[in-house]
Amino acid sequence: MAYSDNPRKIYAKVEIVYADEELSHDVRTVESGNSEISHPQDVYHLPSVPTVKACTMDGHSTMDGTFRMIDDTLVVGWWSGGLSDVNGVFANKPFIELSFTMRPIIYWRVIGDSKLNQYPVDFTLEYKRNGTVIHTESVTGNTDLERVFSTVVDDITSMRLTISKWSKPNACAKILRNFERVYEIYEGDALQTFEVGEELSSAEGTYNINSDSMTVTIYNENRKFDKGYLRNLMLLDRKLFPFIGQMKDGKIDYQPLGCFYSDEWDIPQDSQWVKCTATDRLMRLQIKSYVGFPLLTDISLYEIAEDIMVKMGFKPEEYSISDTLKDFVVDTALLPKTTGWDALQEIANAGLCRMYVDRNNRIVIRGETDTPIASTIAVNPGNAFSYKSNISLTDFSNVVSVDYCEVTIEDDIIDVAETEIRLAANETKTMTIDYTSEIAYPFAEIDNAMVQIVTFNSGVNSCECTIRNNSGEEQTAIITVSGNAININTRTVTARNEESIANYGAIAYVHPTSELVQSFEQAEYMANLLLKRLSAGEGSLTATWRGNPELEVGAAYDCTDRFGDKERLVCEYNKFNYDGGLTQETRGRKQ
Image (cartoon, rainbow, N blue to C red; front, top):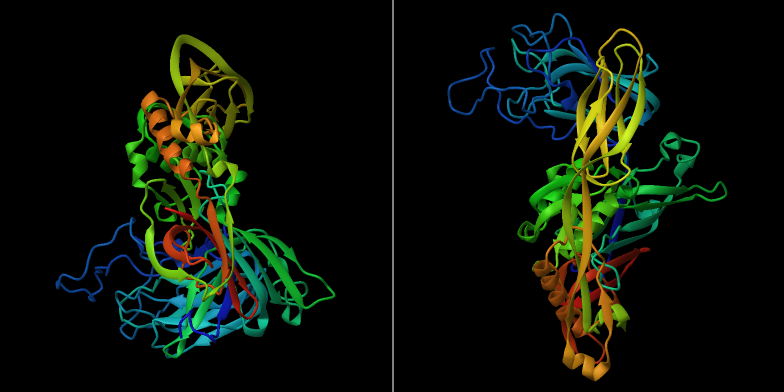
């Protein structure tokens, strides 16, 4: 069955993760012992696969070229300290115990070493509440590399895995996972409705950051959300994964629609339905502080954007930055302390970028000149319910102004912070200091020889530093931060379409100023690019249609309106509505 079929059957589900390795910052491990190389923390982090096929000295490795030596840079899992006997039995049973904030156990997963094909044969799982064993799972004669337990037990604070027998003689235990997320899947009668929005750019077509959102209504079976085992997990930042699917080759093929984080739970006592509202990870950057980018010369926008991502705590696989930003080199780059959201908005203004979260939960920074991915999906009168075209004032302009900044560094050294700090004996503190004005080449001094500045990471208007008291007595010290004064002057470049002005009069657009635009040439390039784009005045076309989740934002698709006019549009916005069936609202703009 295809999404274009009529009639069609639409399937949907929402997976909600209430706790996982990202959300559970409180997980701790205790082990009976460890080999010389052992990573107990691997058992509650993904991936649950060893990096290499480990070469061991226990007689199970050969010189066939498939084995490799291991070190602490690899994923190896927990390796116990003792070895099994010739029958695989442990005289002293090794164990690993994970403790965490009180939570239900809905599923629990135990995985051995898939590269070596080693696993526990006889073992027990103890479910504990504040040290007391509440439930036990015992397994004997296991032959599976992976075992999943699905007993639901409320209010558990620790889980202990104890191994009696291993699959290989004269070997230590090797566990890659002893953990499982707290999650549930809602589908069928348990899922009433959901609405998911995804956006490349706003309706005005400006260069900005867009945070997506979703709402879902699910069944409160046995009052589990307010009286049952999920009652303590109705928190912010729980992960929601919505899916739309169709039957293909006898099974449901689900299309993911992204990852969202809960903002609000609405749990009425007079109804069996719970409503959750969630937003994507970009929204969290509005409350996360970015210390700023220090004054450096000849730095690309790509490097500055990457610095923001790293300082916001994202891993390389969690973001994608357009390579076009590598060609945009800033003569004297600087960014003041601000929120992560506002710092990215500076990148958007300077690089003519759009920023959004894709369906793989990656933050995408997309350049204006990036080529859209071609889609074979088409919207036409045969699958559309309604069309609406829109041309706003910001979609048309024949006079475009772009500012650029001239940055000069003064010879004068100025003091921008003077902060007193009190430290107990041998105490270390980390603190953030805001400056009274922006400076280049900052440095810090302290007036007490017993107190040391351990680290000093500074932007142009704030710093983060670590201070240590090296004495056995309480100390008071004054930290002074100084640097060269920075002077910024703003100039403006204007591009005009004289023919359009003669026909329609002057209609102006002023692009937001960014201190990262610092040359006449860059401002002129941006003004001409914007003028070409805004002179078209095409606006956007929004269609409400039967929908197909395979059409993603940023993709180019064909749209034929009710008058038979066909255009190639770039998808800027999708809103999916599921209530047993699917409708989709899509907004597109000419390439």
